[in-house]
Amino acid sequence: MKRIIAQAVKELSQFRRDRLTVALAFVLPLLTLLIFGYAIRLEAKNIPIAVQDFSNTPLSRRYTERLFATNQFQAAPLLGGSAQSVLDRGRARAAIVIPPDFADCIQRQEPSAVQVAIDATDVNNARVTKSYIEATTRFFLRISGLQSVPQRLQARIRIWFNPGRQESLYIVPGTCAVVLWIYPSLLAALAMVREKEQGTIVQVYASSLSALELILGKALAFLVVGLSEAVVIITVSVVLFQLRFAGDPTPFLLGTPIYILAAVMFGLMLGTKAANQTAAVQGVALVGFLTTLLLSGFIYPVSNIPFPLSLISNVIPARYYILIIRDAFVRGTGWTGVWFSLTMIVVLGSVLFNVARRSLSRMQVSD
Image 1 (cartoon, rainbow, N blue to C red):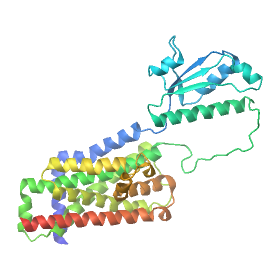
Image 2: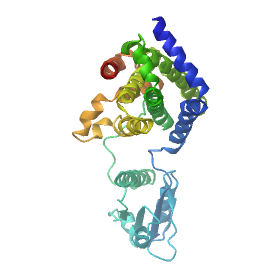
Image 3: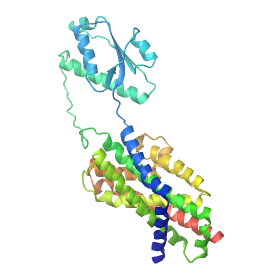
Image 4: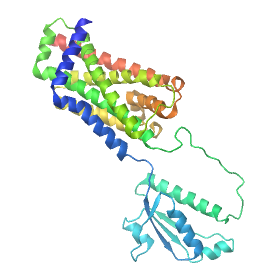
């Protein structure tokens, strides 16, 4: 145990002396949190739409005003052309054409066809735009008393867990999970590869320090660094993005060090296999960052990932930690909702530890 602690102290001393590594550990995670937290928005707003009103009646003007009364749409100027031409030029995401007989048909209680053309280059935003226009049209008909048949069924919808619809409550916890996976693993991988590049790994082999003790010593050191990163990241998230615990915080408090330890083990595993620091960085970026960003449920639901990539998501620890941290700050269900996720992080971390230990043991024997 003393040799493990001595190895950890040595790693922390080297870490403190390297200013570039300290910046990599704390400055870059903060920048990542700020960029992701403020830049990523999943709900489309201020969608430019062009309206061409051939009716030009009080009723058609009220309908147009109702469209722009929401925060979702903004008017795109026609500039002497038709609504369709504005859409074709990319100056609007949707074009609405109100026919000349719009008011007359409605007053005679006859249906009036309003043409809506939507740019479907971005399929997701096209669906959102379509839903917004349909919902606004139904609301306009209801408040104007123009529905000929009263609604027999009314859904009273209440938004649960996040009634204010703050996207930061969804994005920021996921960003914390990505940050706490990438940077501890990157630091651990660089530290392990640096031993091989500088030749100090030979001294370790010549000493009585076993591969298990070396792995545990480095893991303990970068676990301390990772926990420091977690404290900084979570504190900034609480201050800037108003994150608050929604329920029992113990799964989060217990799961965070286990998750960081799994990230460190992942980095040590890559460090034992990489030949130089460039290969280690590329391995963390390709295997760690891309899979965590795209296959963990950070932005897109895991259920939307097609087969066979959906199988890969089952072995990504960030997928399970995202469920834990979002539950802590948004849902608040506690142990009953996240016990399986915590179990999976422990299992995957154990697998990474065994792979790193065996790889280092083979290197020690071969050298």
